[in-house]
Image 1: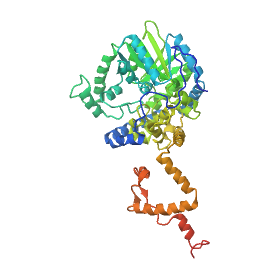
Image 2: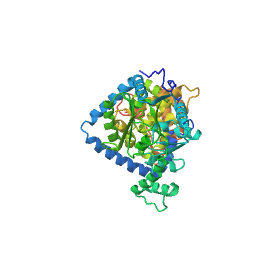
Image 3: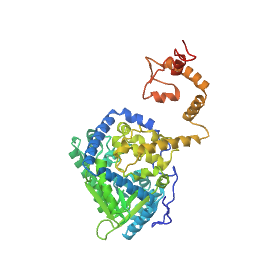
Image 4: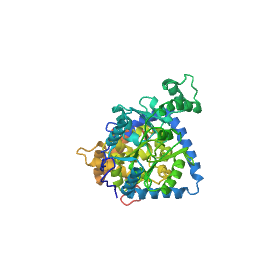
Length: 505
C-alpha cells in the first residue's frame, strides 16, 4: 500500500508526486552520463585517487563483514524490516508524527523539494538568524537546500571536513555518499587549504593529521556562536519519535546540542518501526559503509528537553518522488537503501568516473536507480542513468539490505524505451531499431542487407578490425574495435558446402 495522509502537524498536506514533478537541482539541461563521464575519464589523477580509495574501502568492508558470523542473517533481517515498513509506511509515519509531537517537536510535511525549501527557509527566518550550521545530508543536497537558503538571504555553513574541502573549490561537488571529497588526494587538499582557507599557513604540510587539525580550528569557529542548525537523519524510530545520526567526526553531535533551534530534514523512507529494528541497521550500516564495527559517534534525540540541548525541534519529512517510487511494486525495493555507499565502491563504472557524472544528488549504482525512479525518465540526463552500468551484479552482492540493483536498472531501461515510443517523432536510435526489425522480418531483405553490409564493413576495416563505424553506430566503436566480417557468411557457407543436398559436389 502507499501512504495516504489527510493532515499534518504543520498545516501542510502532502500529495503524491508523479515522476518528474520533483523540484530540486535542475537536470533538464544536464548532460547525459556518457557525455559527462568523458571529463572524469580524462582526469588521470582523479582516476588514480578513486582507484586507491575504493580498493581500500573494499578490503576494509570485506574484513568487517567476514568477521560477523551472522552477516547474512543481518542482511536478510534488514531487507525484511525495510519491506515491512514500506508496505505500511502510512501507519508508521503517522505513529512517528504523534511521537515527535508528544515529545515537544513539530513535524512538517513537504511534498516536493520546493516546498521543503520554503518550510525550512521560513523556520530559519522565524528565528531572526541569517546564518545556519549544516551537517551533511543527502536529502538537503537533493532538494537544493543551500540554494534555497541563499536566495532567502541566509548563509549555510557546512561543518564537515569533506564539505569544507569541496566548498573551497568553486564549482566542485561531492562525489561520494560517505566521503564527498574522495576524488581529491591529500596533496590536492593541502594545496587547496594553503590557497583558499583563511589562516592556513603557506607551508602547510600534507600530513592528514595536521590538515584535519587546521580544518577543525576553522570549523569550530562556525559552531560555537550558532543559534540554528540543520541536519539529516540516518533513521527515524516511529515508536518513540527518535531521530538517529551516525557520523565519524563529531561535528554532527555539536550541531545537535549547541544551537537553540534544530531542524532535521529526512526522506519518508528513513522510518523504522521500533528500537529493536534500529539495532539491526546500526550493525549493518557501519560494516557496509566503512568497514567498521561501530561508527565513532551515534547520536539520538527525541523532541526537546527543557534546559538540555535545543529548545525547538522541527522534523521536515520530504516526499519528492518517493510516493511514486513506493507505488512501483518493483521499484519500491530501492527505498530500502540506507545510504551506505557499498555499491559505489565495488562498481567498475563509478571507480573510473567518480560521482559527478551521475548528477548533483545520488552517485553510483543506487543513484542510477533512485534518480530516474523519483524524477522520471523524461530528461536526457535522467534517462541515461540506467545505462551507466555494466550489470555485473557486484552492487547487489554487497548491498546490506539486498537491493537487486541490476534488475532495477534493466526495468528502468525498459521504461526509458517505452517513454521514447510515445514521442511523435522517434529518436534516431528507435528509428534505427525499427528499420532493423523491418529488415530482419523478411528473409530476402535480411540476405540483401547482409551482403551489402558485409561489403561496406570490409571496406571500412583495416588490418582485420573496424576502428570507427559511421553515424550512430560510431558510439559502439568509441570504446571498442569491431572485427571485420568474413568474406563469406555462415549461411552462404552452409548452402555451398560439399555433400549438402542442393550444394556443390
